Length: 218
Length: 313
Picture 1 (tube, helix red, strand yellow):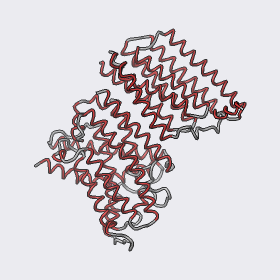
Picture 2 (cartoon, each protein chain N blue to C red):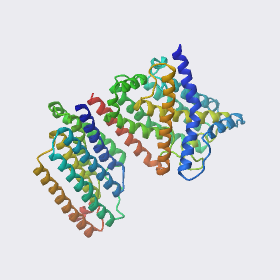
Picture 3 (tube, chains in turn blue, cyan):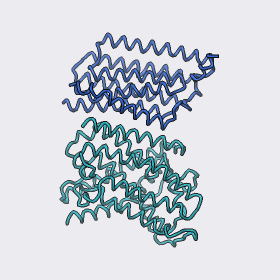
Picture 4 (cartoon, each protein chain N blue to C red):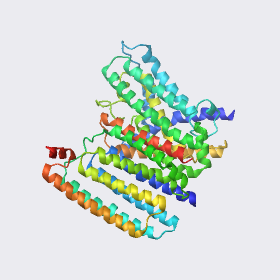
């Protein structure tokens, strides 16, 4: 039973990580958004798995909230934004695709290295997935700093959120529902604020390329 | 003794099935594109025709050009003796493990590029340089992806990897195996010259890789090279099928299990051929400069596969 549980949770976490890595290879903004959507769906499936095997009924609600917020609402808002800035593609990130893939592979290895003591300490069947969650967090941070378009940076930030949620679910079988709800509200608010920022950036510079912000210094 | 007979039977079966596999991919693709398509046995007829044709060799070509087809063909046939296609404890398992398999395949690629360069035609040189770029990026991924399996099996021997996965079915869905499967699948497309890396259906494209190298060949030389290319496709498909989903491979050498092994091999080949055909219908060829990016995707996947099977042992 436990081995099935640990296999499933590790499998789910690998899928979540793979959807994070897909970002680095795809270029269109819509591809970013669909990768994020699928990642959120898999994340909520992992949450359901943990809820079922860990016998924690609150987690079902968390999974439902996850699916609604990150699987439906935020992707829809993102798509609206992408539609509005139709011609904007992430053509030239600061780091080219091949290098960023290798860098993110190394980041995942680094994630394995830093979670080693954590995994050694933990007795949970889900512990093997924690390095992957940490890897996703590092990779998303890398996405945020290496992309130029504000929209793709926002997707990177949302993936970072997914990584944190995955780590929480795997490491502690989720945090109390009330805290989780607070986090969801936080994500939604943060996302709305960022949306306003993006519209403002687009208004001022006629582009969502954040490199343009350098012009503000003069 | 029976083991050696089996080895020869396995190699003969692979040689016999290979052109049919290529024909099956072409036929499925044609049906998906609403064409009637040539029958599945068309490649056999093509090979028979080519073996009867006269050989025309450029006056600039050296002995290398004449030797290369035989090296390519024999090195590929040698691989069929080492790969578990039908049964697992094979007598030649001790002769070569996965490293030998990888480098025998690379030997064929190397001679193919040499032969492309030899007559001095511009297309051949172009194809050879591209093939080397792709091979240099794909080869480490093949080794790394199979290493991920070797780590969890505790041996680089292909037969033992298969036996180990059969003994422990839960390992087949472990993240290491799945990541390695994805990586090896992408590399299979690259190594056998399928879309999105190379277009096998055309001779007249500036972006061709495999076809550009063999443009100068004719007659039986061309037949040998084409046959070897088909055999390489079959080898990679049976690696994908038997290393990751080993059920059906015969562990005991009785007629019944061997019959099951042949049938399951056919089933796996048909499934993989349909997957490749669907994929080739759905996607367009990549720009040449994006090919290294795709291959680095598969390299990172293989790296993660090795890491996770190393740390989750």
